[in-house]
Image 1 (cartoon, helix red, strand yellow):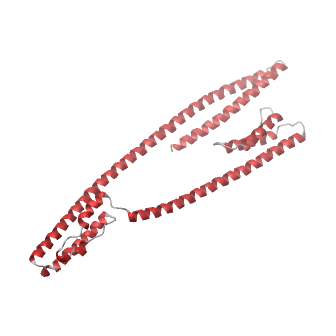
Image 2 (cartoon, one colour):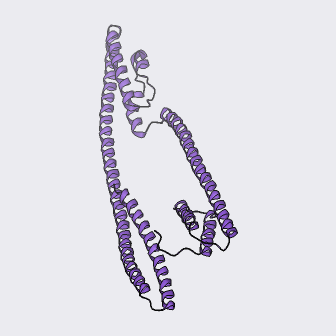
Image 3 (tube, rainbow, N blue to C red):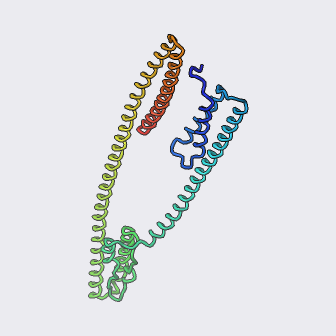
Length: 309
């Protein structure tokens, strides 16, 4: 049951003007639509009890309100469609970007130049070895690798082939040439073994760096989360402080309203009754404002707490 006095039609027209300003807002902020529809619902409810000087006045106000509400619906639908279209465009852009990125990264991986470290490993292996009569030059004349380990594995295979060919060619080599070829193979094997050792050392070093980077990123994430929790907790505390103040103010106003109603019931003159009624109306408006503020604060607190879940 409604306990507050009926709204004056001028005040209702003022609310309609307020709705018009909201509908015509060109730069709506966060919470815009919620506030707008809340105002529209309030106006619709007030029409049920507000009395106008004439039926024509009421019909004009109602028509104006309906026109504004229809315009708001159209703007809302248009806004929603624009948001959906922007989301679709963003998704399409991300897909195009992802495909372009994959294509570029694929080409980059295929054309990646050797690092200084890789050159240091590859150089002793890739230089053609000088074998007598160039018997083994073709086998060990390798191209620069894209991947160090893969290239070293290929070098191992080539080295095995070289030793096998050397074994097959022993009877064809003169003693001096055989000795020179053996020394060349032994030197190449030593360089390949050293390259493997350097690769293993570098792999351990890089792994250590990755571990360090992972630890750094982990600490950064933990610190970021800690600061986030701290910030959200501080916001919650501030909001709860405001909520406590608002609740206390509401209790005071409700107590004052109760007293004013008692004064009105016991009023001994019409002038005092009139003043008392005005005070009661003001008090009820304050209570309504405080209740709305409490509702907003409660909603904000719930939103902040949800961030910590």
